[in-house]
Length: 171
Image (cartoon, rainbow, N blue to C red; front, side):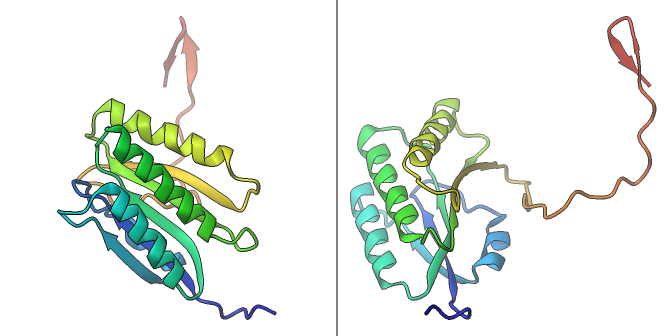
């Protein structure tokens, strides 16, 4: 029987050339025991992926949040290793508990790099057999802050009445 006091872990993977997401602390509140794996300058992407798998094997508790800060690198070896690493992260999340893998990048990255992240997210979602584990893509700018919203903010003032005039909205 599993104890309800089981600790929830988060893992942050930082690829070389990626930016640290400013909103990461919001995810850490959900899973406070954090492990950070940073890409060493002399390390290949395959080596990073293998190191992430080793760290997953060492975790005690449950992995519920994994954030992969992605560099805008598009070479096939890098993309293949990133895919393998993200699959390992998803597989480490128990389906009875659930979890989320977040692919993070800068909003200033090239469109091709952004499209590659969406393609990876789609591929990862195809392999999921449950709805308790999810994959998300987030882009952030240097000035961005938290993006997690638990409930809609109350409107400060009522919205003006809108009328359609000649196909244009006017207030």
